[in-house]
Image (cartoon, rainbow, N blue to C red; front, side, top):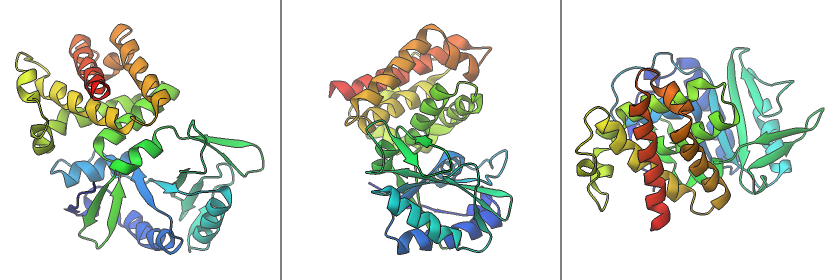
Length: 285
């Protein structure tokens, strides 16, 4: 159920990335390949589209495009078409990556029938290369359409989808502490930007956490986001189980809570519990 918003892309990225989108998106359209944007660009675009006015600390220079393809042949044909664009060169070490003007990275992340049940894709390269992308296919149906003042229409991952993918990424690589800080940033701003969506829930999440004094907004947001994640994962019980176990485990060892707020671990644990409760809400339906 995509929504349409208008934003100025130059608020979150520079003119080179906007130019890059102008040349890449027509190639995807001509090839009949559906896509959506994930990663930091999706995070910043969605926050801006929802009304967040603070500029990002650093404008995004990288572009992560998840592309729905049915076979490795289709994926390779798409890569060949993109390689014809001026200034866009394939990475010699990572078969899913392009470099634009020797400075900007574009990751072309395949999902759909090309992937196995674990979200893994074996790419053609000099050596065996397996790209692991669990969660991409589950986030895709919830992607939102953003219309820009620069005349572009972009499909981007929703903020609950961004959070789910960042949880998975951190679980795979705990050294990526920025993923948890990004989650914390989204949670700190989510409720005011999604007031209408939260208000539409059948129960009153605003009252549910009425006794919460220090992290009220974050708990309301986390409960709603957990429900959205549960909906995304209805068709993938294996990945749903993995994320549920990750949240339960972090109720005990506090690894995520420590990264969210080293000075207020107990507050962060309550936020994690709210997200876990939200996922369980969706399962119970």
